[in-house]
Amino acid sequence: MFALQEGSELASIIPVKRIIKIHLIFLVFFCILLQRSHAKIIIRLEPPKRILVAVLDWGLGHATRCIPLIKELQKRNCVVFIATSGRAYELLKKEFFLTVRCFEIDGYDPIYPDGDGMVLKMLSQVPGFLRIIAKEQLQVEKIVEQNHINLVISDNRYGCYSTKVKSIFISHQLNIQMPPLWKWVQKQVNQKNHEYINKFSECWIPAPEDSVVSLLTKNKSGLKIRHIGYLSRFEKKVLPKKYDLCAICSGPEPQRSHLDYLLNQQLKHSKLQTILVCGKPEAMSKYYKKDNRFIVANCLTTEDLNETIEQSEIILARPGYSTVMDLAKLGKRAIFIPTPGQTEQVYIAEELMNQGIAFSMKQEEFNLEIALKESEKFTGFTTFSFDDTLLKNAIETIL
Image 1: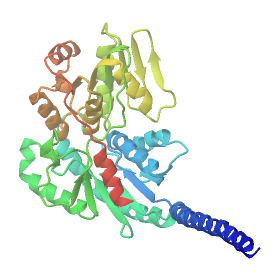
Image 2: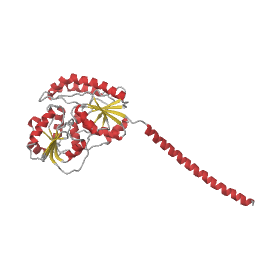
Image 3: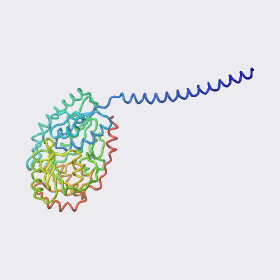
Image 4: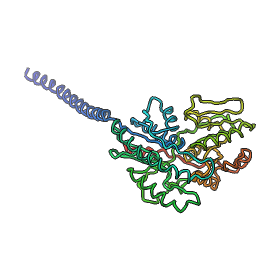
């Protein structure tokens, strides 16, 4: 009887030990899960970064190259605000409709000469530019304070920095090039350029270290820089050919209108299947004129222009830095017409010709038939590599 009772007690003790052991295992797992969920809760409760992107209104190139930057910030759940003016404001407002709040700040509104005399024309506008730099700095400080901004990124707007939060400057023009007759002031011009850049925490260069236009991007003055790689809003697509040629107008007035008129006259008499994109985002309608052979578009969205370029055999455009990056991303053949007197575009066009990449021709000498024939001797943008990890790594450092 005693032995039977002792066995019963022993049998009851064993399940109890097993139950306790199982409970302990569950408790350990529960604690681990609780810690992990607690960590996730902390991450979710951390407020998203609020970032102001200020964009220069000098043509559309600065606006278009900021599109991939803004999209990458949005992927990281950042709340992005945009501050710009003019056609850049119109373009970005349409591009990020309802997803980004846009502030319209004072614009530089540069006016180019009808012909020669670019330097003198720019010098006459310097007092106005300096007033805008001072004014936009006050406007940015107000936006930062009222919208609890954590970071400012300025694409070539010298006054768009804050004394309250970290500010980053984006530029490919570390070394501004002056025309031959004005080389004697180039050193002083770049000293002033670097003085403004040094007001920012660091400078991001939209190019790799081995840039195709290294004369512009080389750091000769010990600036705090970071290379973020070439920036393009476009994506490579395989589409059937629709156009023999796509012409794109861009840049400040009146030279944008001069190019628009020049290309309109030559394209409408051509037997080629062509499209002319005028670069006027303020226009209400997408297309100005359409027929079976020649189409004129006021402005196209990023997606539409991406597809149009991919459907075109060759592209005719200004050799603006952002345009070059876009065409390089898509591996296109190109013909360039530099803006008269704009030294940077003249340098880029000459450099691309010397490297056998793209043909260029002066605006006053432009002939479509000759340009198309000469362009056959050039390879197009076939060897460019885009490394988006440079931009992603740069963003990681600021979040």
